[in-house]
Length: 257
Image (tube, rainbow, N blue to C red; front, side, top):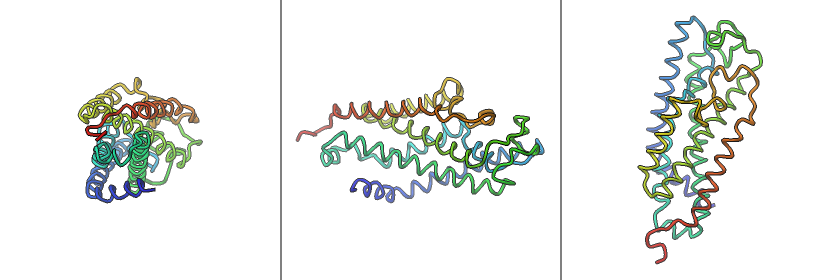
């Protein structure tokens, strides 16, 4: 498909920007794991890769650093998507909206995959094992004061991947919908950053960073029910459908010429 080739072509053209953002992500991961390591020294406990993944999903860093960096990359990657000439070559606006959403999905998967890989790689230098929550010397035990026999590392990794992709995808599509409807990226930035700031300081009132989307230690006390992700998926589908419906009403300068 030509648009997939176009996506990877643009990705290649923006490889320098991607490398800069990845470098910043690595610095943030080092900051998260470094702070965790300092806490471990104070508690005289040991950390695992699972602890590093949880540290990297810190609401403050994720909402106010990782997400804005990803949005900046998406904005740069798709800055010509709404250009009149591009629209005229893609006369079906519904298809154009679909392509934009799929590109946001691909970027979200790429960024969260890189975040997972670099967190595990850097965390391996600090960790004693993949997960050690069955030990009283674990950092998990020092926080919760309970041993966890049921949680396996792959469960932490899968949940980390799914929840963060949903967060990134929801934010990215909402951002692009606002840009699509208003033609002003500054409005999209203000809305997203305001929402993310609210989510950081009032997480219990945020559907993307609240209890059902939490990766913090208290959320691992029992079995996680993935049905909790259904409201987020429904919201995502609603935003997508809204964009799909509104795309037919989108007007472009010189579109009919």
